[in-house]
Image 1 (cartoon, each protein chain N blue to C red):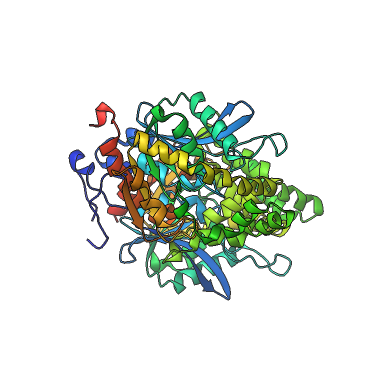
Image 2: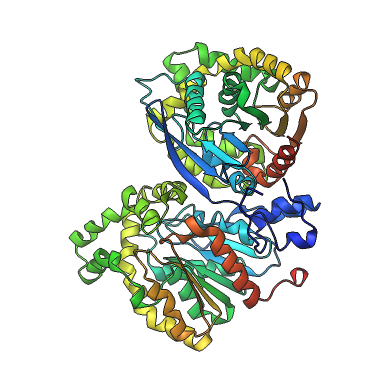
Length: 323
Length: 304
């Protein structure tokens, strides 16, 4: 056959097509159907994507800067045949509606509090965490506060170690040390379409694999009225995450959650050293470094789904009907 | 060509989608953006998008087909990521869109293809069909008109007025169709009442990002003004279909009040052997049920 074939665990994305040939089309369609929902939690109206069986093990996908659950648009159907996949937009991002700056303090503590309340509103008693970029400081706060709820952690360029921070953080670190208006203003460069695109293509060998949809979608977030000051606040507050690294490391050592680090190793923000470091505290941690950049899902979505499915099958209790 | 799996085997083995590529091709001095996936040695499916979208509308369909087929989805000139010549200096018509799509197909060296058409994709695709009949392997028609039956009388009047009334008031009325409310509430959410949660906001988020400026919107207004010429061309397209009998699959969202199901059924007058599936979906059926449509296409392609 002319086309490339690989033997892989079934992805729902592909499976839905194949299962049609084995006369289960209705089931397949239901499994791949993604729902786009909202949940009002206190003052925040969360937007979230949900797919998969209601009684399946839960995976909570937490996105990074400057995007939203949009970054998981291809991953969700690749997991949803087996898992209940839930991906909220954090306050300040995407379609989630939160109070403007001044009425809501845009700090990582508050993003985590709101996200924690969201998980409780959805009655997610136990879940696996997928954390990327900003999703990491949110997710690790949840995990450290409620270790009993966490079934596993997948870190995709989601950092918890100082050696993981690279030079791209320089201007932001300058602002941490000297929070002057000048140093804050200098960070506006990070909000431009040029920087957004750069985050997607830096470290990527074949830029034709990077969909322009991600950067265009993300820029609609950054260009929304009032978004700039919110994002500058979060750049400033990111130092609170670095301050918490030791606490999260203590949590990793004490609880040793099953942990998979699957990282783009050419990420200009987070060094692969940050991925390897998980093994210091969780010797069983599995580390996969992919030859791509920060937004590894954009170029290596199939590979990441495959690695995740293998890891989750070994580490998560599965639904009995799927065993 | 296609591989049938037993239930047991299918759980372990799959035709994995090929990675999608996002590229530009220069034609007639302008850049046309396109999505491409799959081995070029496999049969090509050319996906032509509708209004108010771009090739983005096929983002979920493409990986469902790319394991078996070579899939190519361009953005029309003036839409999506393709170049947008200034509408003050440039007249947008469906002939002009077809010129660019034809040049695009030639530049990529596509010698044969199956056309998938939705909405605006039909007047572009049928022009392409008339110009390159030797390259046409088949048609997939999704809420894509070639018959007046598909348009209510009110709709036909709308296109006639859009064509004839170039007054500021007439233009302003057409501009309203490019606004947020028109795109989100009157298009994407119109056909999924009571189950809005199945419609991804990504569709309109991206579409509206491409309709931000007044000039972006006037490009689409010019196409509304030209649309009536498509109705006048229907008899020629029908004659072609009658004479050439291209293999045709119709997958039509039957809850579409803009392009009504009678437009799907009308094809059988000229193409008695056509395969017709009325889907429980709306105008944006490919956003609602890409897997179902992919299965129909795969079965159709096997039979070619």
